[in-house]
Length: 294
Image 1 (cartoon, rainbow, N blue to C red):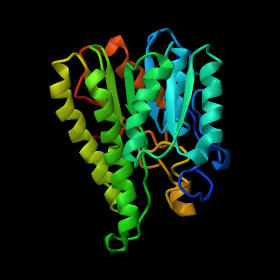
Image 2 (cartoon, rainbow, N blue to C red; image 1 turned 90 degrees about the vertical axis):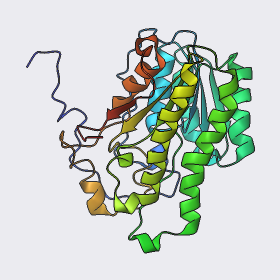
Image 3 (cartoon, rainbow, N blue to C red; image 1 turned 135 degrees about the horizontal axis):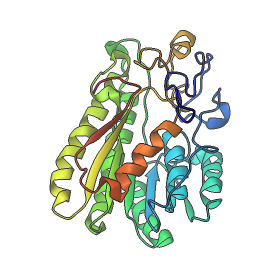
Image 4 (tube, rainbow, N blue to C red; image 1 turned 180 degrees about the vertical axis):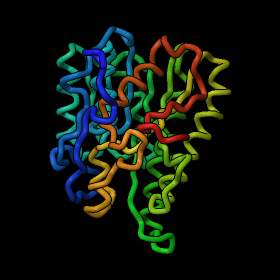
């Protein structure tokens, strides 16, 4: 093996994850081991210089990894988060500002149509515009069986993952200029749905349809619309999903690479889709799944 290559099976390897439980939304402080967001490893190359990004669910997990990467690539970043995630948001923005970029915290719930809409204008006002929209906010929960699926939780999944996404995208779309990029965080669950995540998987499949449909219309305006489909990624959402100790111990073991991924391992996909390198990429779903097929 060359000195500058690594074995993807052992990169970020953790020998299982310890049993732990959190309430939604999960918090980084209570997630063990700490997720790797690329704080010490991501190196930027100016690929997003001068761009302005809005990231929903940007305080922790995949959203934090994307925020760090975007700032190091030269973008100013606004992140949306729940009020109870303010500490995580502050930590993320500290990393953004350390790169000399502007950072904006937007606290609220994207299920609230007014909030999910107004964050677009607030971002444009604070950052001087909006070029990159990352629709990443999500909620999931485990169910024992289909007949135990509660209406309240079902509504929270659909309202967060679909309505919240649509509210923000709809508000941003009319004023996006040619060269702008919309990126949705879908999931391998859209293609390999688990019974315990049936409602979540349904929303992720709907997001794929959203990306493909909007890409056709937006292409005529020079706007690209794509998705990233993560596989099992170690974020605060995982210990807040309701899985037992055995499920956490084996999280990610069923991938061809034999492990769960870390948020840092997705950052490059979001950078690529937002950058000029992806100028001919639209309507695509980029798999970052440890080898699981879409």
